Length: 435
Image 1 (cartoon, rainbow, N blue to C red):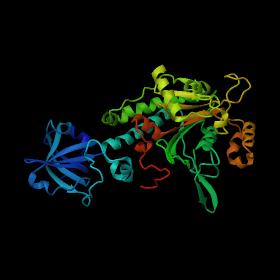
Image 2 (cartoon, rainbow, N blue to C red):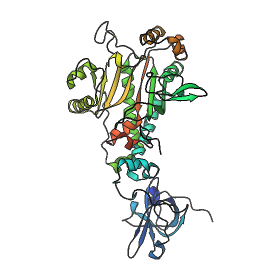
Image 3 (spheres, helix red, strand yellow):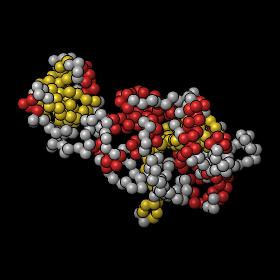
Image 4 (tube, helix red, strand yellow):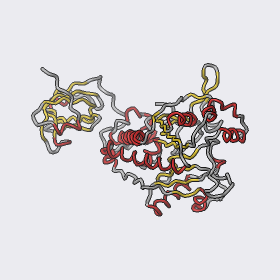
């Protein structure tokens, strides 16, 4: 006899009543009533209801045990999808599972965040918790699809590097065969160099920041979505690509994670045809901050987010022209024609705020070797220390720029999480190294 092919729970509704079916998944819940018992099975597509005779209910494996169920598809309007499984033969596929630390069958988990994080390999099984990462995975599909269609090449850069990318501090130093090396703060140097090869590149990968921040918005390791493109005019060309990427990520969610959106009852952001932009100096004035402030504080970002919502009906706001002293040395100064002729106080860079939180940093980079040498000496270092990086510029690099977007922050803002760790599979921070 030909083996019965597996039917997924989410596809059970399409099986004709009376047909044999074979389901595989975890025991989500066992319900024992006076006249009938139910086993609710959970797989990657959803839940399926299995009807069990009361006499057989005592032999059912405990919750979270992986099982195989062979039975008959039977119409029942009360069952998920209108079809349930009757006359089942239930076979455990592992030893009986231990009692989970939380009741995964409940619609919502009442446990605190430390409990959820301590038991992440189990608590991520909860459908509403898992839905958060479904959003992340769908966003990545949209991110890649958008850039692939625009002629970008996906690349992967080393995560063990010889020097810090952003600064000499806030890096994790490691012993690399007897000499010092560092975990990469970003793929910045490499994605710039590869613009000289492919013109347009992107990368999805982990980055590491040894920043001593114990906040709801910082992680020591996170997933960075990096983009770099050549032959630009200025940072506004970069912002235009970012706008398309954000729209593509939203489309990815709509296409591949509609169930997660429905389960979490989300209000997805509308990406406007053109993202509203305000200059950094104007942003300071708007929030009542001193004009010599080098950066925006979290309360400033929240105030600007509320202003963008009220003024433009937008969840997004780009703040451009950050002070050069706050930006990395490879940042291009603001064009002479832009605001202050002859002034290099401002930069051709931007931060994108999403619902009142910094989500993206981007801008135009230096591309002339002499400019790099001057910028490096201005910070008290010698260009020779960056020889492997600067060789690309010595051999000719086009005007270019790019941006980096934190995946966990994107998801956290979409679900309006109070803490970024709620949108991180296995967070790493000042205190957490396991699981």
